Structures are given as C-alpha cells and as structure tokens.
Image (cartoon, rainbow, N blue to C red):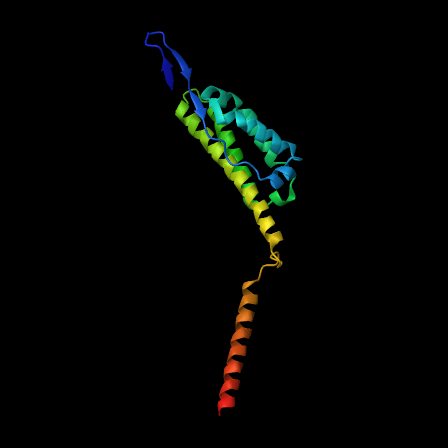
Length: 180
C-alpha cells in the first residue's frame, strides 16, 4: 500500500494487486477453444485480476466463480474431457469460490485477498499449460511415423522378452552344436 502527502489527511492511492500475464494458449488450442464461449468468457473476465485492487477483486469474485463453474460444466472440446484437465478445472473453481467467500468476511486482510488472487491466476496458468501440453503432445504424436496410440502392455513386453531370451538361447545352443 502506498500513501501520498506528508499531511495528516493523506489519501490512500493504491492497493493494487498486479501480476504478470500467465501462459496463453498455443494457436491450435486457441482455434479449437474459440468455439467454446464459456472458456472465452472466463479468459476475458480473468484479465481484470492481473491488475486489480483488493476491493475490486472481492466485488468481482462471485461473477468469476460463476463463470468458472459454467466453463467447467460445459467442456466442449472432447480432448479436454481428460481427468487431469477436469481436476484443474475443479481446483480453479474451488479457489474462485474461496475468493467469493472472502468477500463476505469483514475482517479479511488485503494480503489474504492478494494471495488468493495469486493462487487463482497460477491455477489458470496451469490449466492453460495443461491444455497446451495436450495439443503439443498431439502434434508430436502426429509427426511420428509409428502409431503411439496403442500402448505396449507389460504382458506384451514380458512375452517379447521371453521370446528374445528363447531365441538367444537357441542361437547359443546352435553355435555350441556347430563347434562340436
């Protein structure tokens, strides 16, 4: 908090909470998600929280919580219906609800609001990071010549190991027989 003037009737100028903009979506993810209005609404609204006063954060908290709930309840991009992504949506929603609850507590401190806003922005960045990772992994997979969709099971690995072991033993046995 910063104060101006040396007189007794000084005025509080700023209790701004400022954060650097977090991770944004890669172009392909942004293109897919552009059709998902609920995500776009959160993305636009959350920008206010990167430079906000404690009072503004608290007064906008319920609207943010409502928008995040709508977003998490309406995932329109099929590849984002993964449990790891849904978990991030849920955690983000819980933290926005916590900020909304803080607005009802008269004894809440500005530092507590600042900390909660920071958590929300970090979680939103983590969500975008996870979405980017999904798209980047898909790009890598598509660039490979082999099909990575079908994972090799442990049983298949064991069978391959056993087969290779038998073949090696057979070759060793054949070499021994040839020497004799």
